[in-house]
Length: 597
Ligand code: F6R
Image 1 (cartoon, rainbow, N blue to C red):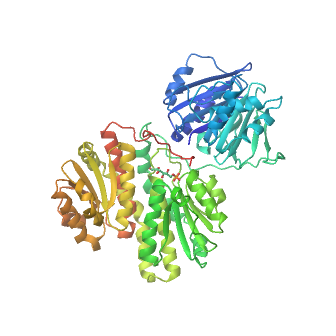
Image 2: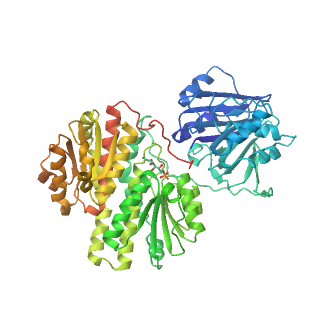
Image 3: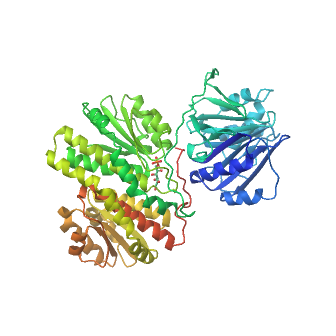
């Protein structure tokens, strides 16, 4: 994780860097800092905590220059302190470096540097990079950078300033993302387009091993082989999220955008391309992702079984990487990611490709590493998602996956054509139903007032409702810090029922009329042990469950309810976080884009 930015040009360097960092803060907010070449030397200012702390530290200084780099940190090695904040300056003041990634061999490198008399001032893996560059410097900055990174194991995206070259910023990457931007007033480096979205007209994602040298006059690119190459800029803009929401309410604003993004997602689904892909004789469907994206994959796995008669695998990307994968040329891997930059997901996708499998990615960022490495792509249409918790992107992924399943079912002849037509119409009607859920905010506020005191919250469900419950539980725990776990309702009696008592809540996702009796039994089992049930179901079922607390959903086929129940649980999590005084946009210990394995 961590966000890095670099700038060289005619603009106000400090202000431009701060703007870039504000756009990247979702990647980590443990500390932030900048380094500027002020014409004489490299000056570093950095602070633990939010960017506001850095802004305060810069107030009243007259720091200026024409080149600078900046960093916003998500701590991996070393706690969040000023000392562990980036940029790091080499001991002789020759190099300043910001880093995103993990230097796997930093301990060995640090001992070698210490043996040569270098004093390290932080507990991070990143600091060694600046000292290494200085120790390799023999009059050629580019050569020193190259020689230093050749010693690094692990992943990195780096922005580098050298005191010996005023007005120049270098960037280099391996397995962590880095984009070069071209704006009217200069050139930029950024972890991803969102940091420089308002400042640039064109972007060029760097490839592994490439190194770029930026000056106000232009950008030079050198390939991994050292040969100079032209930069190929793309004039691309992601959809902007709606403006006007006050800071601190991004999560809520993004939930409110779901109906609109579902409309776009339905209209823009690449139906013909997907049908032609699905007409190939696939023997194996593999769904890969992390966190919420993995949960969307679980919904798809259930839907594939229900309407296509296909048994697919859904795997957490990091787990998939722990053993030799069972993948071959007849494997279609559907790789799910909002950002398209999640390190585990990217590695898993690479692993599939290296074993001859095909990649279909469902991703929200067109310029991402995942999209660039995929054979086929569905770009979800939610615009930028800035709050850390995935909300609209999860719903968009599930929608794309359900559209995918409907096409597959049709191709496989698993459902009558009038049934498919009915389901397509129902899917087209979901945006309106989503808007109904979003409009009912009062009831979430009331329930959240009660839930905020819960000892623990279990999310329970069966089949597709269980897949949805997993996402609901993740949302609650990540933004409200309440203990929460998702569990298959039928499995409760095999152990977890021991935890049901007064003060514990059970959010029961029970949208399928065919499972009414079983769900009613779950409600009874937890209530009679003192736990409080909250039922999520359409009104026709809620009235039969006769519970005091419910969150009714608009009626829809149970196959599609994971979208509506997810919105309900997102709103419940958001309001519970607010009721507990938490900041749902920037939950503790997390970052939006997890670019470390
Ligand atoms: C949860 C959440 C994370 C992400 C996960 C994958 O709200 O946001 O669990 O879903 O880190 O991220 P992407 O989808 O960008 O690969």
